Length: 110
Image (cartoon, rainbow, N blue to C red; front, side, top):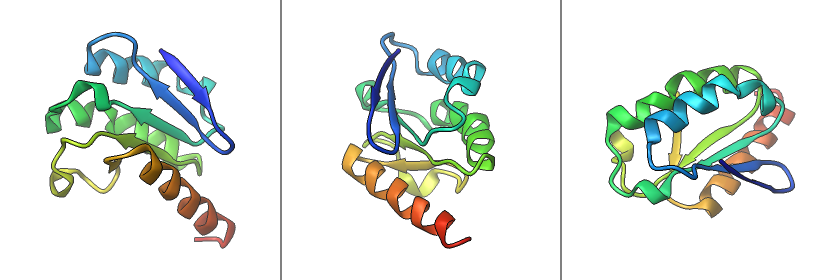
């Protein structure tokens, strides 16, 4: 896994070629990143199925309960089919923007 630290979030990228294993791995090591906003960049997988994306559902729910953002970046998934518990955006810039908005909401008590 490759990590890239930004001002208020960390980008996580898989170095292998199995999105389901990556989701399982991130769920197992969640404690390492529980206090950070996360961007999971899985653009390299190209065409992603909803079933593959749902492997990140447990991680998303756990992470967001801790009052931190988790955003997945992939530009091939049909956003309308994605459950509300998972934030998916097509670009890294949109992920950064979404984290900024969620930080403001948390600061305001929403």
